[in-house]
Image (cartoon, rainbow over the protein chains, first blue to last red):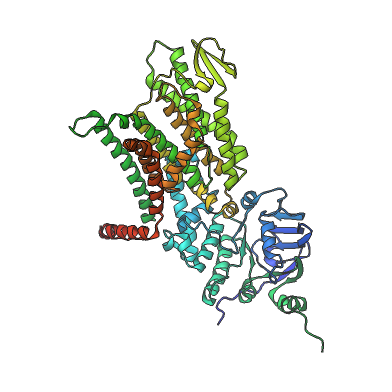
Length: 284
Length: 356
């Protein structure tokens, strides 16, 4: 397969908490910063001492073998789990004591490893639910069809189609979300997350179940989303073509601990990472 | 977009049209203009209860079908609405005896019934909505019983515009209105079929418009996938509560109408059986299917009356009919035949629509 998408080379510079940032983001506040983040599940340290800094327009990757705690990190960042240690700062704001809804309002949106769409609803309604806090009107005006209802519905409709057009899905707006092919469902989840107007988009294995051609398109689209919405993206992925092709900074997790951080080139040649994935080479 | 909007629009249109046509037919039969097209006495007496049960079924469908919470205490809200509605209407009668304010009294009773039931909905919702699934069902069941037993111990009487209240003590001065386990007595009947029809229309407007709005989508999103709904910033507690309270308020209004249809109403009327009866309407009509709830409530309210000629076997046949309907509507073969039939009929109209 010939790689069509080409990542522009960026220089990574040191950031707080032993992190790295693309040089262009150094002057703006990082969209996400975690300090010594950790969670215990009854004595099991699922994630420990997790330090990560993500620049304002960075595309970052979180990789690691199965069971390393990657999705747990996502659940911590989105406040599905409350961390037992450490701090999470979203756009400089501490999220201690917040719930998922508040974290979303601060600017963090996610997709799920096992797709969680509203399968019985139409594609457009799924996006409209994402727009819930962006374009609103009161329940009363909804029940009695007041002018603000019509205005809000029209705006939601236009914005939803606009967002769907990122992935060329505007023609599918009437389809039932659950009946879409797998790849389209993954894309719809991204659109729904984008509808909440996030500053950081978390993608949990966005390329899972996609063919190489679709993955290629996905890479272009992730870059396009970043450029269009000026947001940061953090993705978990096992497809190394995608990770190495698109991520600027990569963080490797194993047994709940960060074992390496760096640019794709550094990670590819890091002996610790190779050992974590492939095991130790026998002596002699 | 066009197809989807027009689909939900036409679906709602059919529901409204069905209710209005049924109302007009009943009115025609009641007036007796057409000879031979008349309504039996027992059926006439069922008209207001049918309206009440339609409102109950549609409002319970909002909780069970749209919000996805199994509630077994719906009759509790109905009883709260009935007693508060009776109280207000009788108080207005006692305070302003010389004026003829039937419509005002009826509206005041409905509004009070709705508001008081909504308050009860909030109070019950706070603890209950922390639970899910079976636990929620059990707690709502308990609340329905608690409300009924509380109402059994409440005494109200009027002296002109004064209101006396006591708990457990039946010795009250003045004209007693609510007499503990004897229930409300000496109620001036205010309910009419027309009022019931308007209440049904109001309920349909509220529920159908709610479903097709931002809040309704949020409620259904929580039902379909709570974690995903939270991840896009939907306040789960708020919207579960909203559905629960609107449902309770509508049940309270239905209760007020029901209470004003009889001269005496006892709290025992709103026991667990009534909650289950309404749930049967919802399940039989299809969970989440508003039109189905209306049809099921109507048919199952009339059916026991129709079966009177079978005497002692009446409830046996009623049960058999229920079981048969459930089996038939759940039969996949029959469903696919019906769907293909539907497809054949509607394909034509769709093609014509495309040409136009």
